[in-house]
Every structure is written in structure tokens, then in C-alpha cells.
Length: 365
Image (cartoon, rainbow, N blue to C red; front, side):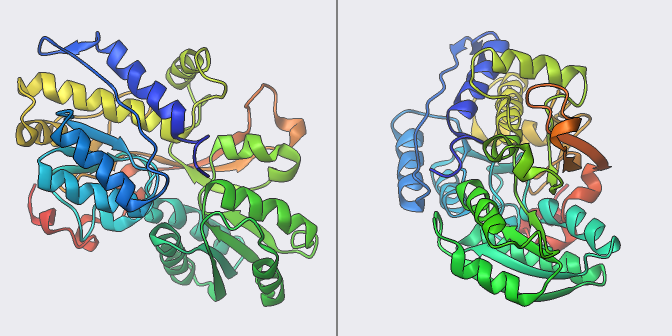
């Protein structure tokens, strides 16, 4: 699946860890964690969610590593009176025009991924951009938000090309990007599309020619797959770095003992969302969806992933985002020591203002 390393089995483990840390039960009932592969297809994702809500009596579906899948599952959750929590989902529409009282977004969205990077780079003189965009809702949202941020910062967007999900061959797209002469080639994609485009870009000499490659979504598992020699110098936004402080390191060490990689931001967010749901059920004293959703918005979130964070009426968790630079091989002192935090963007600044989301719940507090 292109995003399996960053979310996949690791997120299943993270959710199980949250259940274990809660004692394995809530309100006298055993906590069960199910897992399924949506294959990046909205019809499959919605069918899985429908079966879980109807037959398995699942209270919350978490994950949905594809914007189209997430939007479909969000509506199923509303129809079936369940809760849906998006983790690796970029489209702003999830908490925007399609928001529902039953849906939450716990990690990034395209606004938070793009604005910090674009503004910073344009201010440093990288003021002309060209986009390689994956052709589905996530890529379109990334490109639109990044373009908006570039223009607001005083830069120019010279053009873009669209490629299918899991394209494999990026040669024609990279030729167009090189010909544009843009100072920044922005990769509005993730997973194998992003890493594949970065690897092939070096063969076309884009960086040697003075163009800078900037992935709009890149995780530590992507960096690991690329290797520091290929990834060094990349600037990007993330919601989590495993060695940022003692709390993140302690949880990450526990995770690594049971998983081949250090946790990604998706893994950490899945743990946080699952733990918060369990706390909300306990606080509500019931599994009733409306009561639990209300508690999820009411209760603060303060864990290793999100410190002193809160949930808005539209379901968006307001947490800090971090602008990071990928280290040079000589700067990395430990295994998985890949990222240097350059700046912290506070949660109330990292995400689109509530007044601009278009969410019908915006007038509710």
C-alpha cells in the first residue's frame, strides 16, 4: 500500500498499546482492537466501516490513510452513529465542509503540512514553485494549500503536473519540473510516490541544477527508506519526532521493542486518539456516541504526542506542529536520529482558523 510503513501494522500496535495502558477494559468491558486494509479504496474502506459499526458493534474507527477513504468513512460513521478519527488524512474537507459531530482529525492536514514550510522557504529566497501532485483529493488539497501559502508569502507558482497514485515512473513529470526552472519542486504526495519521485529526481540532476526538492508529506520511515545521503537537507513539517523529549523517547522505546521501526507521527497519533477515546468513554460513563463525542471535545489532551492540546468544535485536535530539517549523515548520532527541529508552530496557528473551514459546526463552542 504506499503508506504501510508510516501507518499500517505500526498503528495497529499503537492502538493495542493504548488499550493495554488503559488496563485492557473500560466500564467493565474488554477493549478489542480490530484491523483491516482499505487498499486505498473508498468503497472498500466504507464497506469495512459499515460492517464494523453494524455487525461488530465497533464504537470508533481510527486511521483511514487516504483522504478519499476518510471522507467516505466519515459519512458512514454519521449514518451508523459511530465515531471516526482521521490520522494520516490530508484533506481539509474532513473537518471542513464535510465535518460531522462524530468525526475527529488527530494528526496533520494539508494546511498544517504546507504553510510552515512554504512561508519559511519563500522568506529565504526560494520564491518560485512547481508541483508534482498525486491525482486524488489529498494531493489536490496539498497543492492548493501550499500554493496559497507561497503566494501569501510573496512567491510565485509556475505550474504543476498530476500523476496517478503509485505511479512508479516519474520521468515525464520530472522533465516538466526541470524545464519549469522553479527554485522549488514541491512533491504533493506521500509514501512510495514521494520517495520514488525523490530517488528519480537525482537521476535527472534537479538538485545539481540548483532546484530544491521539498516533500509536502514525509515521515521518519520515508527518510529511513531513502537513507540520509539522499534525504539530507529536506525541510518538512511533522507533528512528532521520537527523540524530542523524555516523554516521546520513553514511549518510542516501548514501541520499538515490539516493532521493526521507530514510531512515525501516524503511529503516535493513533495511540493518542485511541487513548483519548477510551478516557472519554470512561468519563461519559457510557459508550453512547453523542455522549462520548461530547467528552472527546470537552476533555483536554496532554500526552507525549500532544501537550496541552484541545479539540475544536469541528473535531480538529489543535496540537503543535514542528518544522524540521533532515540531518546530514555526519550529524546523526544514533539510529533513527534523522530530524532537527527548526521551529515549533503552536496548535492555534498551525491549523486553518475555524472561521475559514466551512464547517457547519463552526458556530458551536
